Length: 394
Image 1 (tube, rainbow, N blue to C red):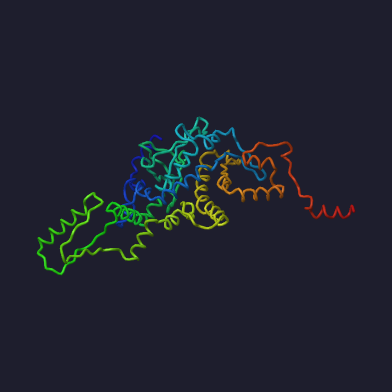
Image 2 (tube, helix red, strand yellow):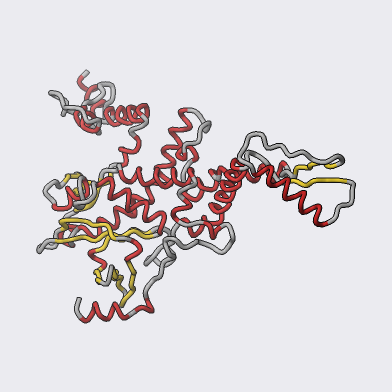
């Protein structure tokens, strides 16, 4: 980089600053409790983030060439094994994609550095720690300062979340902090109630007039008795005194229960159906199949599209792009949990002569059989020309 690198390091005024990993996201008291660690203690939020990352992780990414009529895997391309098996010495392909997705969702941006050989071919893709990356906009081009080293944008995979400028992004936590903070408050309230064995606040009522020091002594004795770690901690009140428990109203209790779950809000923030957060009782089989397809369409495809576009743009040279090189994502992998729909899908393609038996068996990871490469045609389906010829022959 030379002089350019030095210039970039001096341009602190155009660096994008991110919120601290342990800092809070928001201004309300509830939001100030939210950071990456505390947010993941909410089970529904953890399940949602992990489910999305798993979906991206299991999705095969295959280097291929595409023409108008054919799609051909390119197993000899240097990036083929990186994407399909192992992008670097530390991670499998699943672990890498899982990590990149989690970082993008929780921090807004995720970064990876492409190491290239002398010919410009990618030989490894290495995750960059988010907290050590500074994004720099210099003369209409992005650069990345990583631990003092300036990296060119062509060599950095940058997966962006919700962005207002296309340069850096915001984490979902920055928008959902208040909602998650209320859920954390509800969890803390439940924990406190359990620690107190269900005992709540209350007052001691009496018709007698008591001096201030007598009230204080009575209160201290009452609290000490209830604070004992014993099953049998029943205080005895003097004659004429009654203990009145202060309880929540039904509406307040309902409020606490709603935010103790927090599922509805979390599902909306992550744009995914509730059943993906492992909530029971949401429709039958057909409804779940439809929701699974909706999950793929609404939650997964936007993320995988970001991955594909960034990989296509930075893994291949201009010459390769002109030759049709791109990354293929097999989304059918995410629908294999539904054998009924999958079988119907294969059946429809088979009867349309769009797929051979061996191609179906390959998708199902089964060995081919003899004559399984032939296309079959229904005997009662004829073109207009075939029908006219048949009538003529008769």
